[in-house]
Structures are given as structure tokens and as C-alpha cells.
Image 1 (cartoon, rainbow, N blue to C red):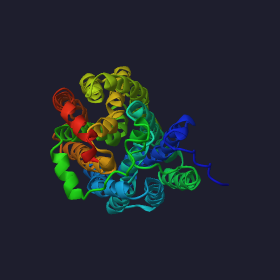
Image 2 (image 1 turned 90 degrees about the vertical axis):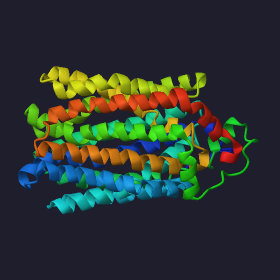
Image 3 (image 1 turned 60 degrees about the vertical axis):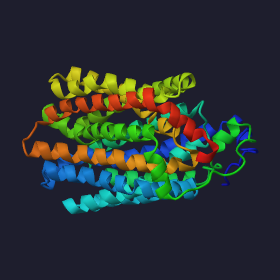
Image 4 (image 1 turned 45 degrees about the vertical axis):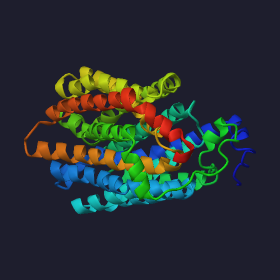
Length: 437
């Protein structure tokens, strides 16, 4: 089988052919496994606690191991994505994390799980910087939020799929099987998509929007030290990173502990807790991401901070439902709270990278995602570990921990409003200057 022939005049004919949307679809399936593989472990926490004797602090450490390695290696992954073919970075990462997922089935001690979860974080950290940069070179300012929001739905589908699949398999066949199956399917997907994903030129979307004449040369690569200096001089980027730290802290509370919380508070079985703990939030987020992407692309045409303000709407309206999730004792109210929180979270999520790309030059895009991922997933690690430790040491109940997290979303909203209303105009202009490339 041979790969489809590349479109002539990639910036023009390639776009008319629909291949840019096919790229989004192919990356969607890779990202599905990216999140299914990382989510599966949380649905078997109760089995590990029961059969292997792990306590909640140890489980929190297992949950945090992925995020710590993922975050610390993210800047390096971003640099790799800016300097090497992104197709190879993406497919190579898929092979690595799929193999590691399979090896999870061999673990029996806490340090085994910490080791493989850390290795999985190392493999997965290369995906987002390279894939978001790739999408940005197929989709310009008019469709970038929509394209990235459609891709973002794979995050939620993978979370649902990995959580539910692992819960069902663990309940009926043993906790090891979901890791073997997910790892094998990921490797098979990589072998297929290697044939069809094509590497665009850097800055391709901007070239197409400029008619191909204004941007003839490739964007100039710069040392990481200069990139960091530029980043520190871009207040909008700094505010977006700080907001992502808080938003990801909250997100990892739910991803890590929602199945356990539902199992303990509502007496659900593994399959029911694994499905319920992921489905309603993630299904709501799938809808919210599409709405947020379409809304942000429209709002961005009217004002520079349109994407960021779209995110602020999601976090501001989402905070009450985070509080309600932890506070309520009624399952029906809980499901409504999860669904609406998920919808509003999706509105925020759909513009994480598109908002950043409005204030970052094209040659820095993968590095920017890597740096943002490092900080954001440090927040995620803090959330995953701290709730487990606080509950284990009886500082708070799990219900209280979730409810208190609503205050973090209020702080995130404040950061986004400052960025979207005060700092974004100058930073958008700086990113568009030829010298910035």
C-alpha cells in the first residue's frame, strides 16, 4: 500500500482537497490512545488498593508520577517538535507510550507503577507540542480554534474510553488486560498512520493566508535561552500559563480521583465508577469544545482577545458546578453538575493552544506548548498527589477537596480576564512582526 500522493501547491490545493481536516482526523485517533492509556490506571485504583494493599497516598504518587515526568520533559519535547519532522515525533511517541502501557500489566509494587507511569509520561509528552504545531500549519487564524477544538474532543473520548474499558475489564477479566489491549492497538494504529500523515512546511498556514508571497523563507530557529527571554517579555503568554496551571490542577483532581470518589461515596462497582467518573464530564466537554472553538473563531475576528475571553466564560461559569460536585449527596444532582462542568471545561480547553498561538511566533509554537505543558502538568501533579495525601491524613474529606477546587477556577478566570482585556493586543502585534519569526 502506498501513501496518497501529496497535493500540489500544499498551501492552496491541499487546503481545497480537505486534507487539513484529514490531518485533524488522523491525529484525533492518536490522541484518543494518548488519553485512554493514561486514564486507564485510575479506574483500577480500587483493585490496586484492595489486592495489592496500596493506600491513597501511594495511589496519589502513582497518579502524580506520570504528570511529573510529563511536565519536566515537556520543554525538551517542544524543542524537538520545532527542530525535527513532527510526523516522526508524533508516531515515535505513540510507539513508546503504547509499549509502556503494555508493560503496566507486569507491575506488582508501588515503585513498578511509578516507574512505568513516569516512562509513559516521557513518551506522551512529545505528542501535544508536535501535533498542535502540525495542525497550526494546516489551519490559519480563521479555522484554527475550530480545528483544535475538534481535535480536543479526542481527549474526552479517550478519557471515557480508557476509563470505562479499564473498569469493565478489571471487574470481569482482571486489571492487567486493558493495558495489554490498549498498548497493542496503539502500536497497530501507528503502523497504519505512518503511511498517511504528511509534514507541512513551517508557517504554512500564514503563507497561504498571505497568498504565498509574503512569507517565502522558513521561520528562523532560535536557542531556547532566547525563547525563554522572549516568553518572559510576553505577559499574555505568562498569564495563559498561570491559568493553565490552575485549570489543569482541577482537571487532574477529576481524572485521578473521580472514579474512586464515586465508588466510595455512592457505592458504585468498578465498571460503574469508571464509566460514570469519566463519561458525563468528558461527554459534556466534547460538546463544549466544539461550541468553544466555533465561538472563539468568530469572537477572534472581532477582537484580539476573543479566544482568551471565550476561555474565561468557561471557567467563570464552571466554578459553581465544581463546588456542587463535591457538595451534593444526590446522584442526579451530581450527574447534572458533572455534565455542565464538563461542557464549560470544554469551552476553556478548546482554546488552550489557539489562544497561545495568537501571541507566539510560528517558529516557537512547539516550544511554547512544551513550556506551557511543563507548568500546567506540574499543577496536575500537585492536584493528583495532594488530594490523595490530604484525604489519607484526614485533613479534608474527598468531598471537601473537590468543592474547594471551585476557588481555583475563580482565580483562573481572573488571570484570563487580565490577559484578554489588558495585555493581548500588544502581544498579538509583536507575534505578527516579521522580526519575531
